[in-house]
Image 1 (cartoon, rainbow, N blue to C red):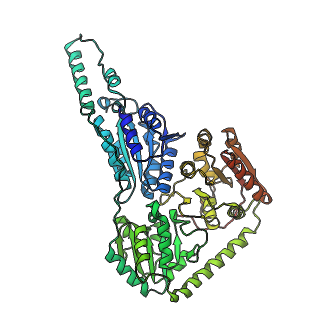
Image 2 (tube, rainbow, N blue to C red):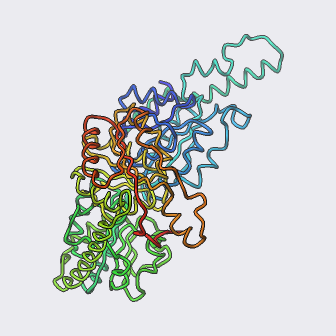
Length: 577
């Protein structure tokens, strides 16, 4: 076996279903060997898409996603996507091609210090120096990526470790004649010795085995202390974030635990949809006001970052409980009264199962108070939805999608104003059915996320909610969707601008410079790449076009709806900086 075979053997043992890539000579043996072992190789049009797709697979399966990229520019193109995975705490293994070991630092093609480039953005940077190291390092990468606080791990695989020994010896002059100067003979000796070291011990058998992530269990004593405070609380609020869904197989138990705890719940990030479309305990609006009134706030996998106004949304007199795998996130900006280091999902499960947990009758007035505020906000949104905004009110478009969305749908959010508007109206139907960038707020995740989601859930409708700005990052991946028979549904909210930025910039600085776009024919681009395209510029046609698009996707065609939107002030003052 050559080195690519050894890596592919580990991929098979780990149960990796997909490797996302953009081809390159540095990594070809990995891709060919993976395909030969039944691992589906999905090639895309930009390396960032490969990493985003692997990230989506990780979020939906709970197992590390895998991307393979070639050296130099192939690596630099991944940095934004890798950083997004790091901040979203997504387990990911990035296989990185590299120049031959003897040519490192000698001006070889695409040879840069990739380790220094990646180190700030990954949990670990691994580099194989011998063929025999490839499989053990691969196994270590999977453990590192999924254990503790998950994140990306890179493994650099020099090209001369991946091809078979005879070919590599030929590269290093192994077939050269024995004559020449003393310097020639010394060089041949040195290169032969170098190759011998590369392949030393490569014949030793290695039986790959599936790795097990090391998940820190929350302390039982801390759970009891939280339960004691919870029983005394009169106005509790629970906020559940993405980290509570990291152990994907246990997500139903996490949902059941929230029902058992019985406190009002707000869901964020990947936890959206955890309690289904409508649940008696779930609230959606005016979270800031609820936090200012609550006497106990439980943050399950949620740090006090900008999304919670750095902790200022929680009043000082409240008991703050935080459960988090990350010691830094546990006390970020606001030290909790009770900090529980460990998996947030398992903490909720333990709390829900604890004796005496469950809905308290004296919480009923508090829940009714919050529900009344939610209903009031829903009424305001309904009123704004009915207002004209030519050609289409974005709220009306989102309401139309909410009406048509089936129960097995997965929503991918990639955009600013349009996607944020959709988050107020469109409700995920089930757990692990909402994918957004996470804390980094990255535009451009959409094509990769949708690709990974549809491959993981082939029978589900995968809706990619795209702003017209963010669509520019990944529209060419319709070529990928078509080539790999991945019939996603993309809905582009086309308001001909970067509306989220423009709204505040124009009001404050009186100039829309760099914020305007053309009302481009994105649907025709999808058609040109082999997909189906629909233009939607009439509010009365929303339902009809959505149904026609769904029918096209059901027939196996990747589909894009280009929806022309009018301007509203629905999200005025909502920009985050």
